[in-house]
Image (cartoon, each protein chain N blue to C red):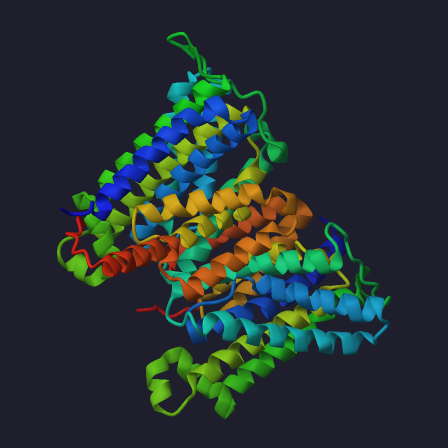
Length: 326
Length: 289
């Protein structure tokens, strides 16, 4: 008789988590349901950011692309009367364009300079929201953004239907990114990050793959923005500042970026801690900053690396030879 | 814009340029030696400003002693960050970059908890006089930073050109491996670069503490222009960064005076994007292979 391998554990855990998330809104307090929706948004952001990270472009504009999605979707729905469910993907497309625009300017800038310049250009977009009161509402942002309509008798502006809508969107996006990582495109991204010269010599166009990565990543970040804005009904530039970007970095670095499950762990653990530490709001950033530095120094694989190590250790302990699926 | 305002704005722009230069030269020096630099560098500046606030404004130390202490504090923090973060993460550009991003949070909370959140700490100016020329008057305190920047950066250039230790720094920046084969201790050089960077940020923070309201958010405000200066000037190039700080200092000050601060920042970033689109390595940077 053989023990189940790690893959079936993973599928079991995933099924359990999804079932838990499906019954949660019927038992939990409304506040917790709202928090869970933000958690879904973080998950989309972290997963889409990891896609960009697999090609080693640790850009700092991801959160601003999320903002581009939010602003675009909100303004389309409010000012032009575009239906909410059409405005959200359009916001994603706009964010994707913005990401491609920024990266194409900086394609030849390398390393540290590239990271800094992405931060600068992200600020350019964000400051333009503050500067131009006319379309963007200045530093107070935009209010009265339409909520989703009633579709097939279900009122999506209510909490529970919107919860399931965001959950569905998150799961679809995660599945798409999961498949993408295992596709030819995903392989080419990894090849570029591991050895750019070798990758280029096998016929992979590095600039094209980098632009593709930020186009796809930006699209999903924009979708996350659309999900946020039609729940909040308002948007303002402060939501997308560098602090938010740093938190995204913390989630993903603490979780680990080596596999798809790193950001899942990172967002789940760190965002829960983030919500639980709300009473310590003033000094909270310090804990997260220290946590990230410690992970970088002592746990380069992040939480996901620790789990993988623990699993390997357990397997050795049992002396079971498992055929590792991956 | 009349002549008086023009002269006044020019003097202010000179002061801002000098401040940017003091901050950014340290960043670029550290970048040259380690191929990475410190995102929390603005918080070193803030530490210098708080040092002067604590010693001069609260404990009545003489102003210059307080500034000297700010330099020391800056250097010590620089050494600590080198030892604690950059040395263990050597070669890991992304890791160093992200870790210092985390450090921003740590410094900001630390300053906020020690000195109070949301309090604007005003440091009284030790020199009330104003410099008058052509009908414009500029406060002496504000332009004080200019001679200091010239002296510090000139001193640094001389040090890097004619002193053994300074040449060793440049050797490490050019080729760490070859430098260590010549018997240069890389660890000592990165420590030296970070100490100089911290000291320069400390002196800038100390001198400018009387101009800016000292708050825990000061570091976050100052870092973006400083980073833009480094990227525009060319990573690792002291001369290029000095040039870029003058450029950015004038752009920031004039646009702020004529339009507003948000627009000034936007124009600066646009200048950066333009420079990088044409010269990806910055104005005077070398192509990194």
